[in-house]
Image (cartoon, rainbow, N blue to C red):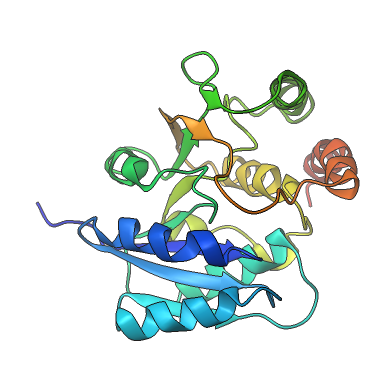
Amino acid sequence: MRTPRSLVVIPTYNERENLGPLVRQILEHEGCAVMIVDDQSPDGTGEVADDLAREFPGRVDVVHRVGKRGLGRSYVEGFGLALERDVDLICQMDADFSHDPKYLPSLIAAAEDHEVVVGSRYLNGISVVNWPLHRLILSTFANRYIRAVTGLAVRDCTGGFRCWRREALGRIPLGRIVSDGYSFMVEMLFEAARQQCRIGEVPIVFVERRMGASKLSSSVLAESVIMPWRLRLRKLLGR
C-alpha cells in the first residue's frame, strides 16, 4: 500500500528553541513534509524556519505571515495554501512538543477510516503531563461545556493535534472561520461535523511545553466561552 503524502502545518510564534528538533522528528516519518506558518515572531523563529527550508528542500516550506496575528488566522492561511498542494492528508500540530511527532503515524493510519482524526487527551481517561490541577479542571470542564452547547460528540474538542483528509478540509468554509485563539479548534470541528465528516480520535499523551511561554490569555479564554454559543446560533440559523 502506498504511503499517504502528508503535509504537517505548524503555526509558530516565538518557538525558535523547539522548531528545529520538532521538524527533524517529523521528517523521520515516511511521506511527511512540513509547512511552517510564522506569525512575525520577534525572537527569530522565522529565520530558523528559513534555515530548515534550505536544509530540507522540497520537504519544508515557510510562510511568513503579515497582518493581524492569531492562531486561527495562521491556520486559515496555512490550510488554504496546503489545499493547493498535491497531498493526501493535511495534519496540524503545535510547535512546542506538547504534540509528540511519534503519534503522527497513528493519526495518519486512522485517516484510512475517518476524514478527520483528533489526537485525543481524553479518550482513555486524562492523558496530560505537567499541567497544574486548575488547568486540568478547566480543560475537562471546557470540553464538557462545548459538547453540551454544540452537540459535538468528540471527547477532545479543543485538541489541536489533528489529521484531515485533503478533500474533507476542502469542504470546510475557511473564509467564514472567525476564531482567532484556541476556539478555532472548536469551530473547525463544528464545521466538519456540519459537513458530515467522519470524525475519529486516537489516544495521545499531551505534555506541557518544554521551552518558551504559553500563549493562553484572558482574551483567549473569553473567546472560548462565547464561541460554542455562536456556533449553536449559526446552526439554528442555518448559516
